[in-house]
Length: 311
Image 1 (spheres, rainbow, N blue to C red):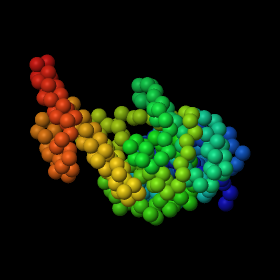
Image 2 (cartoon, rainbow, N blue to C red; image 1 turned 120 degrees about the horizontal axis):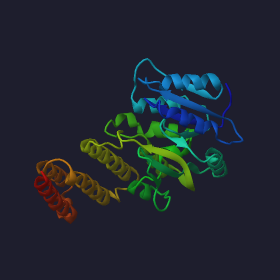
Image 3 (cartoon, rainbow, N blue to C red; image 1 turned 60 degrees about the vertical axis):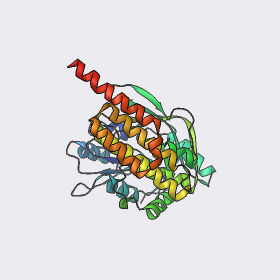
Image 4 (tube, rainbow, N blue to C red; image 1 turned 90 degrees about the horizontal axis):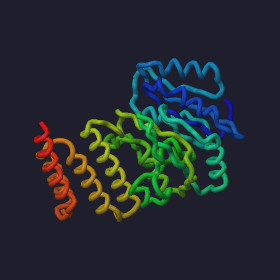
């Protein structure tokens, strides 16, 4: 078995339009250490696997494919692909994203080698939607403290390099498979790193994250968007309680409440808005004094009246 310093862990499902770009972006990386690409292919129904097999035939020492007879879902695919990695470090890259900075991996491994107390490092990403519009993420400061990351995770998955031994400790400690309500695997991992190691950021764009019209995190279906928002805040609240003495619980519960009601101010019925408001207030009584929710309700009513006049 070839010794490698770093494994690029790539999970993919029905990414035939994007997977070649992802693979090529790794092959173009300039490093003075050996790397491998470990791809978790989750029984795609398009040509994703065929494209991967073609690349594997061209680069048999660099590319390994993790497969199964049936679809295992994003969480298990993520876990099994990480488990198959041989590198001391792991770089994350979903099959529809790609690296842009040619020395991304070199810079990040050098930083980790020089700072043994740093568990993970990340950089900025370019978020590109299907129309081609681009924004830089995160906006503002690249934060690294637990409280800052609880408020908003700045670490896009495609920009992160982490120590594999700590990734394995995360899985043993948190056991994310016991949290089916968590709709993402990267946020709980990076929050665990912020709570249990030092994190660092390299302040430059390194990767592209494609914002697709239909995905778990981005969907035209408002109920799916709300479910994802609930999941993100529930993850942060879980970590705030476990590692931060619930110091941000009031803030996080209020933000969760306002964000979901903002979605409902444009979507769904007035009754749905009221039911969500009541549910949240029952969970956290202080929200009854939250002025923003009443303003959003007025906006909801006005929005519906305006739409009726346009019919």
